Structure formats: C-alpha cells, structure tokens
Length: 79
Image (cartoon, rainbow, N blue to C red; front, top):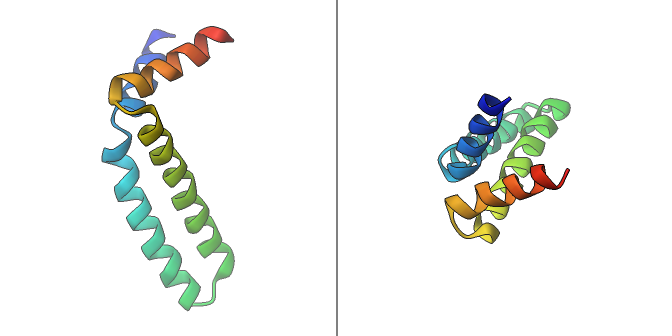
C-alpha cells in the first residue's frame, strides 16, 4: 500500500514536469482532430488538457512540491 502512496506523492511533487507536456500535446492533437471534424476525439483531448491544467493550478496554489504532496497526505489521512 505504501508503494501506491509513494508513487502518488512522487507524481504530485513533480506535476509541472508531466502536466505541461501533456497539456501541450493534448491541445495540439485536439486542434488537429477539430480541423479533421472528428469532434468526439478532440473533446477527449481537450478534456484531458483541462484536467492537466487543473492539476497545474493545484500545484500553483499549493506553492511547492513538498506542500502539494503534504496536502495529498493530509487528505488521505483525513479519510
């Protein structure tokens, strides 16, 4: 069980390193499929980019890698 939490803490500490590339890639593919008029695929890519943007906003509000992982730890321990 601790391996799962260690992985989650790692992902939450380094949100900008995976979130920003995912946003860029998803927006690009969403635009390509929008031009091709395959709307449902573009909606999937745009939705994924939006979720990654929300992760980035969470990271900015938390203020640091340690605090973002600490907020996750506090939320898990509250449950």
